Length: 206
Image (cartoon, rainbow, N blue to C red; front, top):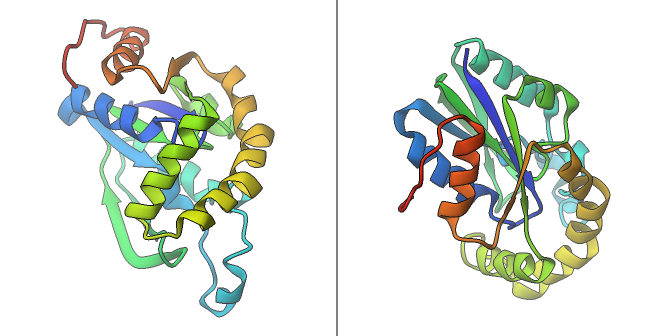
């Protein structure tokens, strides 16, 4: 049965970067999935409500579908996951077919939030990072790859991202099997994860 590895932490803490590096090290044996794909999205008729919507609450994520997908993959079955478009805040018509691998790496701010997911997981990792670094990374990411206005990015971070982080995300730190520093070199974080997976070894490049 596939091993499920959860990687959680605050927005722009380094989760995706570390998950991608881990996936490269594990090679063809690993599949990386983001909880971002499981945002519920908006009803097309409710476009006016998008600006005020809080994406940093757990109820913005379709955990029912996420759990269903993880159960299928762990059982050795293929699964279909949604394709989420951050520009429109909606799910597209595209469906992404994924196939089981020996290691399933699930990353996202709420990767450690669900008790059901934690019970299914082999290991859970929390990526810690200072707020000052996280907001700088968020500005760089959203203004470039998501074409958002810098002022809007900062406003959202301070109004919803940060308060929701303290309320819902940071408490999951205590549920992790391992805490890694999102500011340290990627090799160090991946080495620590590989060690708790029983696949130790000093990595020089990831």
